[in-house]
Amino acid sequence: MPWIYMILAATAFVVVEMTLTHAVARHLQNNSIVDVVWSAGFAFLGVTYLITAPQLSGGSSLNTSRALLLLMILIWSGRLAAHLFVRVKRHHPKEDIRYAQLRQEWGASVDRRMFGFFQLQGAIQVVLSLPWLLVFGDVSANRSIQTLSWFEIAGASLWLVGLFGETLADRQLAHFRKDPANVGKVCQVGLWNYSRHPNYFFEWLIWVAFFLFACGSPWGWISLIAPALMWHFLVHVTGIPMTEELSVRSKGDAYRAYQKSTSAFIPWFKRSHPKP
Image 1: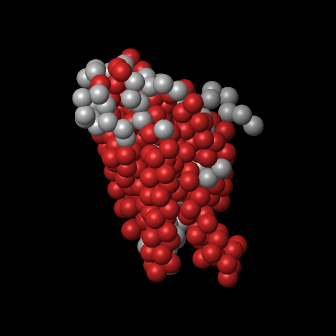
Image 2 (image 1 turned 135 degrees about the vertical axis):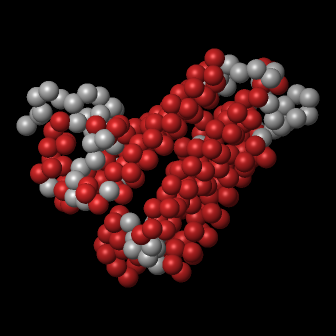
Image 3 (image 1 turned 45 degrees about the horizontal axis):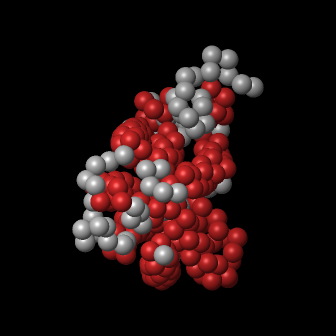
């Protein structure tokens, strides 16, 4: 049961990761750093899976599939963590509005409850990394062959689209915000003209790509839970709902008009007749 040892190692990692993060966050009085650690932690999870993965026939622990997947994980995780680090550092010591709101709601119990919240983030990391577990834990005969399946080729191709789209969306928004003339205005340049949250959409697309990549391994289909869970969080929980609430509060009718004319998630053309 090689997967059991891999899951135990991943679980041990996220517990230590989030325990240390909570201690640092308390010291800095800024819980926003968990977003940076959460993103960067996926890179370490990928390495953990590789280290604890069973050896393939021939005595090696690395083949083309595992090497490519690890590279995809490291690049995506590193870019996202660096992007979030810059944002958190720019606003420090001010917390992200989500954590500031939780600090206010939880009052005197904030440290205890935030510890549990951080550990939950670690558990979510393990669940989301299921596609990687299935690929690194695959010891079927064809895994020793230095070729990629069509699923893996398709997954890597879609990953490139997601990475490029998310990077472009982040840069377009950053460039828009740098212009003092745009203060209080709604960003509708580039990808933001076709989706109110193109960065979220392409982030989700990356998780679809990881799922597709895992479909080249036995039981890969069950990793559909990763993009499904990410969709739920982005569309219904901490992604779009909270971001739009803050945007309406700060930009008012301008953002309401944007909501009526522009797709919330999947990039699409403007509505010719905005919904009422």
